[in-house]
Image (tube, rainbow, N blue to C red):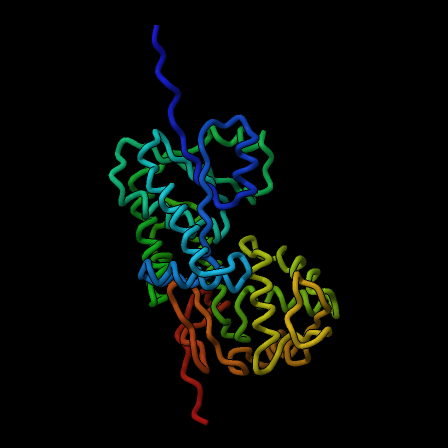
Length: 328
């Protein structure tokens, strides 16, 4: 009596650590890790430009020695994901944070463009950080995976387009509509909009988290400041927190001051503390962007110049267009 072979399953995850935990579990299938900096890096609408700019940022953050190396790693991941049609089922694992949702809508958009009607796509979504689960916990989540339906694919495509748009109103319009097909999308992408400079003080959510902890800790090790800041925002990584701390240290009117020389310390060593100017901004008595200008990518939007063209209004909880700065 012949038996049908077990279904072939491909698991898509966002970190090597989580992939290792899944491999130790009883969950069957292969794993592929899709490392993408979409939540932390420029995501312009052109794919080649996106890959190059993210490669440059990965080099700047110390993950790769060369842009070519970063691009090759990205191509390798894309090639493995392009073979999703070779499997009976593709399972995407993610949690509610912004980082995971950017990857989720990106990958669902790519899968929607494939000729993969025979493949079952499903998702495992947890309420907390997926990276904290044990092998047995992941095995317990697997049977509760949910199929990806047409409405979810369609919403993911629209969300990825809006996230990459150079016009931030595209994302605001998306969030004003029905996003219930992907229940965590609205909260995650609202977190993204909160990273825009605030109308109150010019600080985005990540800037504020770092400065608030610097104010509370006083003079402290950079490693302690970075680690402490991570507790405030679910999507915040040590890499992103360090990047914002570095930007607020090496700007025209610094918010933070190093105590061990002018060079940025290696491996988060060295002492750092908030400056009087940083305290003034944190109190709402000064504006970070007015003092320093801005050059920052948020999704497909490039904020650059003496004023941020768009800001987050915490009272109205929406983006608003900024007035141009007064002449002189």
